[in-house]
Every structure is written in structure tokens, then in C-alpha cells.
Length: 461
Ligand SMILES: Cc1cc2nc3c(=O)[nH]c(=O)nc-3n(C[C@H](O)[C@H](O)[C@H](O)COP(=O)(O)OP(=O)(O)OC[C@H]3O[C@@H](n4cnc5c(N)ncnc54)[C@H](O)[C@@H]3O)c2cc1C
Image 1 (cartoon, rainbow, N blue to C red):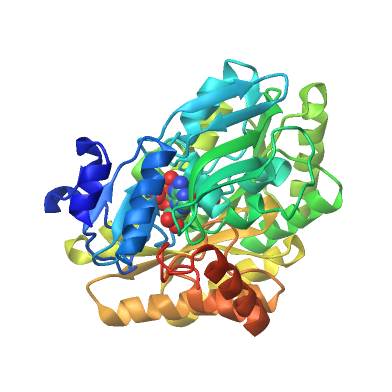
Image 2: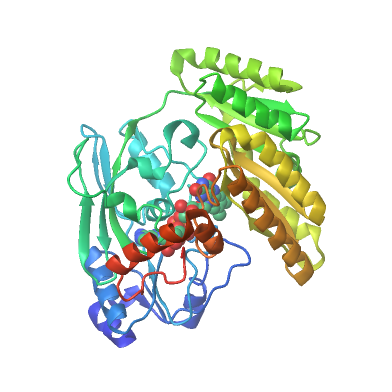
């Protein structure tokens, strides 16, 4: 396979040096298995992706597509002997069309690079995962990524209107449209959104754009209990308010962020809610309403950022949650053996307070440290479970906590993953959530598009 790849592709795009291969083995998910690929291909054009997949299919070798490997579910992890297709060199913005409000991009374009290019046209692709400075649009589409502004603007899939995809057979499929509307045929585009590389390799993406947002105003509300913070979120939604951001940071993360980068956060609070409004001249009134609702729900302090720099600092603090909890975990055990199992559940907003209480109860029962950050306005929680990787009993307790939290999410009508995807981490839970008929339909779709089961096998189902 490797000599055929070398003959078909530019010399510098096929990597076989074991030291280089090792850096393509896994994503950011802790405690997920990964193997050693046989080769990594770094294509620049769709034809090179098609050639690589065709050759891999001939040898029945698994193909693992990768973006920036910031994934948190093990979806991009290599399996032994696989061909890794790293799409990061396909990083061209092919077109920005202001009149039709669309952009056409290769999958390796980084989210923040696209944001910068679009801003010059006063346009915007809203989904903004906290990893936006490194994650690729191909990865965002393949995980249907969310982010902080999704409470108002929706997740990645809502902006994907067309795709070019290389199927497991090596054929190139074009889906979707460029015009503002179009209903021709089945909605194949959204079959690939969130498919985590199991149905095809995305080689080009057509995105619907929005005009650049109005400047926003931001507030912080400090709560003595997470229950009160959860109740405030429900009250804000109930009142018909449309914040452009509504995030929760709990006490564990406040302490972690303050230790990672001191910025004067209230570490005595049980939880902070960060809210923003970007409704231009109406933003101050919108924020005043959110302020009142937070106080009524029990906030003991509400503070509005005085200028955009201060607001940006608050958001930066929220974006530091992952590296901060990682550092806290490392520092919590001797020899730096601490690790974090990042969970991702989404529940109805009405159940948020109950689930926050439930997570705290589960953590206490197992004597495991669990910090929660949440895209609270969407009911999307990330319980971050701190374990000692060197101690199997600690890892087992962490996994029990993970399972009980996911069970709780399903019990209140939620889902096992709100944005990180199934990958390796949630395979059993997906089957439970969608049931036997759902599993059968998933399998039928997979068999139709990837008959030899070479695309990211073992992920999702
Ligand atoms: C600090 C941090 C913060 C994060 N914050 C958020 C957040 O706020 N919201 C959120 O949703 N996620 C978040 N994530 C998770 C992660 O960044 C997202 O899942 C992101 O969309 C992954 O993009 P990537 O380019 O790194 O893809 P990868 O991790 O490389 O791949 C992700 C999945 O997509 C598949 N894939 C990648 N490219 C392609 C392609 N071209 N064709 C087919 N399949 C492909 C892979 O096989 C894999 O299954 C965060 C991660 C970190 C480390």
C-alpha cells in the first residue's frame, strides 16, 4: 500500500517515519485507546484524497481522517496499521461570496483563520468552539461542533449547505447547494455533519454566512449555589430573552482558572454565569433584564463589564477552562499522573438545575473531583472528571461517575453528547440512546456509503 501511495501522491505528502507517525496517533481525549498508523497522508487536493482512499480500500486498510486532533472523544485516534488522512494541508479558502453570503473552504481551514478572513468582508461563520484557534472547519463539521455563541446562533450544522466528500469506495460525491434555498433530493449534506469521519472524507465545505455581529455587552452573575445558577438559566429562557452567550463556570473551574492564570475571579462562588447580548441599541436593556432575572434566582452579585476589553477578558477566562482543569488534575496527584475525563451531555434547560445537583451528588458518592463548565443556555454540560491515571481504582471510580452522569442525562430526556461526538468514548451510550432500530438504520447507512467498512472503523458504532 505504501509504495502505491508513494507512486500516486507527491513525495512530501506520504509520511512513514515512526517518529512522525507517533504525533498523529490521537486526539485530546484522555484515557481513550489509540494505535500506530502504517502511514500518514497529507493531501492538498480532493483527487489526492480519492487516490489515497482508493488504494487503502484495495488493501482493506482502515482510513482515519484527522483535522487538528483537538477532538475530545477519541474520534480521530489511529488504529494499528491504519492510513491516517491528515487534512490540515487542505487549508485554502476557495471563495467568499458576500452577495450570496456563502464561503467555500477546504476542510483544513482553521476556524479562527476563517473568522479573520470573513471579518474583512463584514461577514461571520458563528460557531465558535473554545478550540477555535486550532480546530479545523472539517473537524467542526464532522463533529457538528458547538461553542459559546451557539445559544443564539445554533451549531455548525446549521451553516453547512453543501459538501464535497470522498466515499469509502474512493468516489467523489457532491451534496447540497449554493443558493439560499434548495430541496432537491435527500438531505445528504447533513448525513455527513457529525458523522465523525465514518461515512466519508470531507474535502470541501460550502457554508452559509451571517453579517458580522453588533458589538456585545457582557455581564457576570455570581451564585451561592449551582442550583440557583441553573434556575437563572431557565428563567432567562422562559422570559424569551435571547442572550448571545450564556455560560456557566463552577467553583472547581474558577479555582483552576485562577491558579492557571490569576485574574481576580470570585473563587468563593459556587458558580458564575457569563451572559452577553449583541442586540445593538437594545443590548443594554436585554442585559438589564438578565441582571434582574439572575438576582431574582439568587445571584449575590451581578456585574456588567464596563468595556469590550473587560468583556474579552471574561470570555478568555472561560476559554481557559480546559487547560486550567488539566493543570489542576496534574497538580492533584504525585508524579503529575492526574488526568481528566471530559464528559459532554446535553439536557433540557428545564432540567439543568436538577442535573447540576445530580452531578455533585454522584461526584460526592464516589469521592471523585468533578468540575462543571457548561454552555448553560443550551443545557450542554461538560462535567470534567479528575482521576489519577496511575491508579486503576481511581480511573474505575472516574468511569463510574462518567457512566452515572450520562445515565442521568438520558433519564431527564437529554442526550449522551451535545457537541463532542461519540468517537470511542460514548459508543455504548449511543446504542442505548438510539435503541435497536436506530442502530440498524445507522448500520445500513454506513454499509451503503462505506461497504468495506474502512472509514474510521470502530468509531461511533
Ligand atoms: C481546549 C478545547 C476546547 C474545546 N471546546 C469545544 C467547544 O467549545 N465546542 C465543541 O464542540 N468542541 C470543543 N472541543 C472539541 C474539538 O475542538 C471539536 O470537536 C472540533 O470540532 C474538532 O476539530 P479538529 O479539527 O480538531 O478535528 P479532529 O479532532 O481532528 O477530528 C474530529 C473528528 O472529525 C473527523 N474528521 C476531521 N476532519 C475530517 C474530514 N475532513 N472529513 C471527515 N472526517 C473528519 C475525525 O475522524 C474525528 O472523528 C474542544 C477541544 C479542546 C481541546
